Image (cartoon, rainbow, N blue to C red; front, side, top):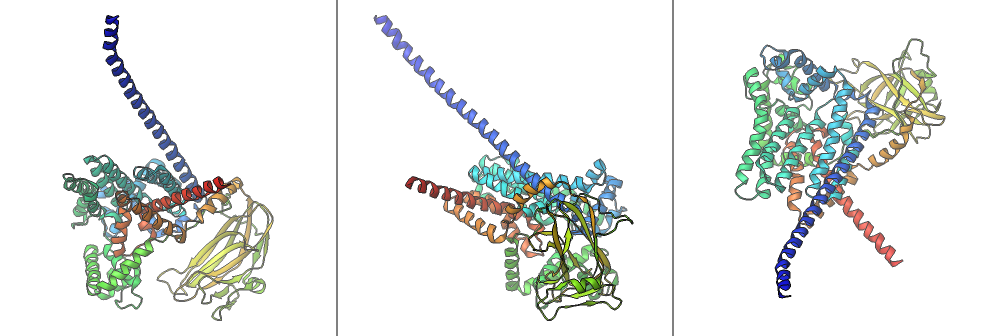
Length: 638
């Protein structure tokens, strides 16, 4: 009995040890299962966000594929021209002083986008659609990246909402289908922030080097992020402990320099000057100053053509007119920078106010085209000689049967001397209707094409096709003058307005409206309008997702999103998430502080809104949670 008790007591510690080991193994297994579950959830959410983003962008591409060429046409053609030279001459053409690429006018933009086009064109011929699909995929990946960045710093619900906002955004969708590098240049910046965030959670030198290198990749596409790496080093002391800070700052800068250096060396070899990425800073600085010089105290032109003419007259060099960077491109850029900095030095308070105004303008969301409620025209717009219009209106008929909607005395409508065109001069309103055609009856679910010869003599005008009850906008176009031509020299353009009618028989009217022309109201001459029936419409089933997505996209307004972003920032400050806030706002802070010094456009600062949408997501999740609590309390009372 004593022996048995002794044996029992001897076995007890072993049993206890085995039990503890079993518990530890169970906990480890639970953690492993939890980790796998979380990874699966991350994958499912990422794929869902990617699918929504791709769907939104494909629908917009379907709507706009025939018209995006008209956006920044000259710039897009220049990228394509350089891509053709690279495709034919390869690396040798890029490095040769004898190549057409050695023309300094090619330094207006970094070569990264043209290199990408050359690679895509080499593999799949010159297909705009292929380039757009590639950009759509990259921009959809950017929505996933925002989700991953936020998920590493904040609750997953806020991360999912942030990714969803980016996926649905009409601003990002629109820029992703343009034949320009702006949306592509954002993806490396987002990856850089992702690696910085990852390094903050689990410090590793290679992550910081990767962040810097990715900023360099962005600079190959657009030069706007040139100073982002030095700016980002300001956050390093707040994110990492002593002993790592100096090393990480050097790694971040080194990664960027490593990627940019080959381009800088190539520029030195071909042009014989130190040009880190591209030229253009002086030009944009001067144009940015002129943009806010309402009194024209500094006598600086606002446009590229104006800058060329101004320099030709100032330096008595007629050969300066016509190009920005040839001849003497580097010299002229330095003179532009010196002139701009001189103005800033003599008017520092005024320029600080300009930077503040420009920074505030960056926070506004661009008013872009939303997904259409109706599917686009699927038939070819090429008309045969046998094609007969189902409706037409001569200028005289348009004047006789149309409705003059202008309200100001300054507006005038009449026929030209030969009655070949209707002359329409707008009133002083900003967007007011000027002339409406008589109602035109159309069939349901049918593709139509309206053609209209228009000569724009001054200003800008909208031409819209709307239902007679103004309940549906079918299609619209903007007509404006060509810079550098007199009113008499302006060409007559055949405006094509394709559209798909609704499911029922309808009546439409053609609207001519002011397009916020300044300083003078618009003045146009309109020829004979013709409406062609192209055939039955296709893809009519997309009306249902289109209607839903369009309704959501209408909420992407500054008046709605910006207050949400501010609320989100305040919530994170109150929650003590200062480091997460620092990581998420480092890129917006950079553009607000640095890009505000020069001329800017919305497409230059796209990266700002990816992160501001993250702040809006925080506010939406908080508001959703607060509303749910109120609902639960109300139910409890019942």
